[in-house]
Amino acid sequence: MQTMRDKVAIIGMGCTPYGDHYDKGTEDLLVEACGEAFEDAGVGPRDIQAAWLGNLGDNTLGGQPLGSALKLDFIPISRVENACATGGDAFRNAAGFVAGGLFDMVLVAGVTHGEGAEAGPRNGYALGGPPGTYRHGQNATYSGAPASTFSTFATRYAHRYGLSFEQLKQGLGAIAIKNYHNGAMNPKAWLHKEITFDQYMNAPWIAWPLGLHDCCAMPDGAAAAIITTPEIAQGLRSDYVLLRGLGMSVGNMDGRLNPQYDWVHFPENVRAGQVAYQMAGIADPLHELDLACIHDAFTVVELCVYEDLAWAPRGKGGDLARSGVFDLEGELAVNPNGGLKSFGHGGGSSGIHKLYEVYKQLQGKCGPRQVKNASVGLTHDQGGLPGIYTTVINILSTRD
Image (cartoon, rainbow, N blue to C red; front, top):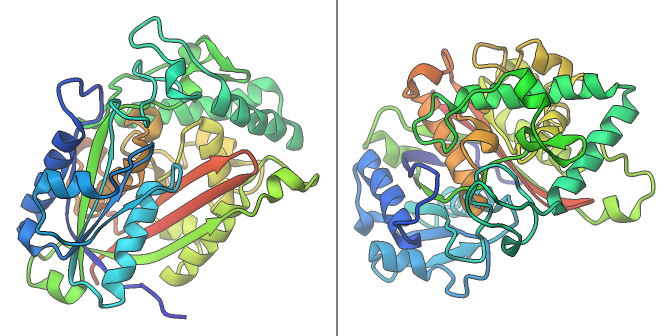
């Protein structure tokens, strides 16, 4: 089987601030993100041979919003939708065409905006059910659909590993506090705040044992990447970033049909991680990766990902989080951008705004949240329904 390792280079990326963009439409956000990417890469729309757009909802126009926004010259544009793994899968599709030699330079963009069916809560905290269950502002209401699903993972996790309620919440709280702390240093993140453990524990319940600070933010925003071959990248900039590994896994409904499904791990994460690690030549991920931006729609998902991707022994992820292993200065900095908790869950664009963070970290351009000597980073996207998920993992590295 062919590999994409070292056959794809990122030469430019852009990302809007994430938040309530009431004064902008979908195309405005795409122009802003793609404009930054073009400027960063030193190329223009006429250099792009094909494009991919990640977007969730009932968009029946396919890739047309991207072509319209950028006035692209009748090139092929595909729209990708794959639950919360949409952004990562859009990048995967584009990378495959470059690695296969079909295109020399392509654009990948993702966008979410409250004007469409992808709209989420506008108050900035809880991921819940259908868009219609939310109201704007301080009096927002919440639907418990996804939150109640992942509360099951939290209670089963505590039961499986013999944790008390307090022990479970100490681990989950460490994750939330870390991500708030990192996001407070990110000018493009939506939530700029820090919390104490007491504030974490005293927050309103969303779906017990998950509280307000266990649930991610869902703002508007867009992100974009320009990718090409390493040979072309060498002539454009010295600090381009390479795709080193990529893995994807889609569940088969085992979690809904198998009575032995344990509700404390995601087999899709395990499989995608194994594929990506093998392609990247990584045998000890905790010590060979420098940073990771992962799907933390709920704190318990981040906890499970630590263990699914072999960064922590089963049942010990919370202990490692509490001890600082996943802090900015720890062995593996997880969600230095603030994660979905603080930066914001951008639906179809989340996978690309995570790539933006890893790209900038590997270039050493992240200011106070910069991970020291970062050379290898990972992004993880996960979406789906109880018992069946889609996971996409990308591993990036600096050039040799």
